[in-house]
Image (cartoon, rainbow, N blue to C red):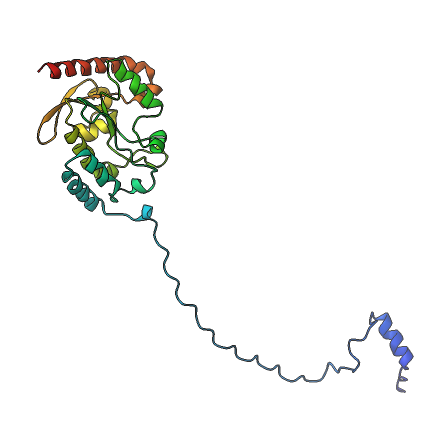
Length: 271
């Protein structure tokens, strides 16, 4: 067969144009069938010195935990050495064994007359108490004021405190460990106030201080002997004002307890 005629330049340009080639990438032709040189390996990267280790961030005080047994022992020793209520308060302000201290706004130590003949003890502060640093200043506190006013008392004639002096986050129930850690302080507080009548408000404070496992329905209105180690104090349990706000039908029973408290105070004054 005769060889095909070599296409002219014009014919080649027409062929490439029809194939979609409409521009040149280089001034020089490139033979794509040639073997290319090996791709040079990249130059080695310079050694980079590692950054010095960063110091560990400080652990917030609220996350520092103390073994419960050590915290309870520390609380007992601190409370035992407090000769006055002022020093007991100072010890609590500097006590780091209870994590509640680091989440609360203020220490809620007490309110009222430290020489009062009757002492009321609740469970723990709430939001309003945490803000003001005083126990029973919210709605339940206003009801407590009316309750004690009904038997001729006011905050100038009573002493008011809580088993737990710091507000638990979100008003949650204190854990048994938190209660045990704080218990030596409230016991020393009762001993230093030395009232004639001790009134526990609600089930948690009643069980913590009077050593009973029964519910408040069984313990309210009953008299107990509270031993301070140097003296036996008459103690009685009644409903917490917050419970009465939720269940006002029990105010009648609470009134009976208040009358018994007033009678006991009269007897103590006459003896």
